[in-house]
Length: 77
Image 1 (cartoon, rainbow, N blue to C red):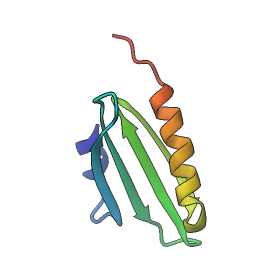
Image 2 (cartoon, rainbow, N blue to C red; image 1 turned 30 degrees about the vertical axis):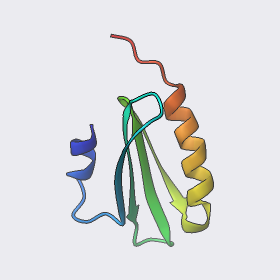
Image 3 (cartoon, rainbow, N blue to C red; image 1 turned 60 degrees about the horizontal axis):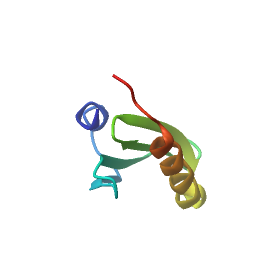
């Protein structure tokens, strides 16, 4: 999922990978959009991914909220 996400961009403003406290692989990407000063924020953790458009001033708050959402997803096989 990470590779498919980053491969769709020429250049990302932020591209960070991490391991969560429960050993899930995760990532955060931010792409600065040209229209209206918006950013595309994508967060993936353990196979769940969420994306939104966010103003720069809201990035920290939106990142925290999105991390809670993706960490609450329970994947079944």
